[in-house]
Length: 106
View 1 (tube, rainbow, N blue to C red):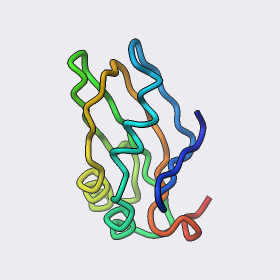
View 2 (cartoon, rainbow, N blue to C red):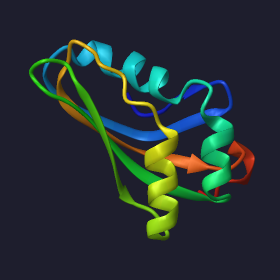
View 3 (cartoon, one colour):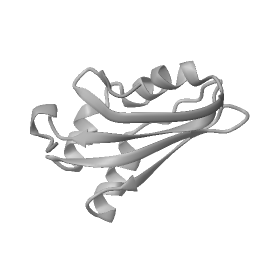
View 4 (cartoon, rainbow, N blue to C red):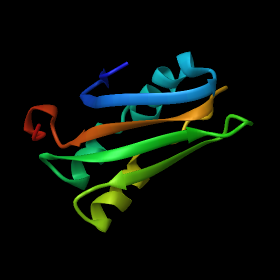
């Protein structure tokens, strides 16, 4: 899966690697972003954050922001995304545009 979107939030260049439940990764990521577009827009406008989602053997989720323009933006994005447990053992990484989709620099 390369791109996906939910409400007004887009995820670009999605790449996943999972030992179990990879087909659940897209829905889990969508759920982690659903309703969070305003919180993400408040972090910055016109840039991307590189976000990683990972799930352990028990399906517990964690999120890390691997790249953002500053530590404040990184912390904001980290707080805005809600980790969703799922029956997945693996991880995904994607670019998350911040601000309104049309404003995000590509």
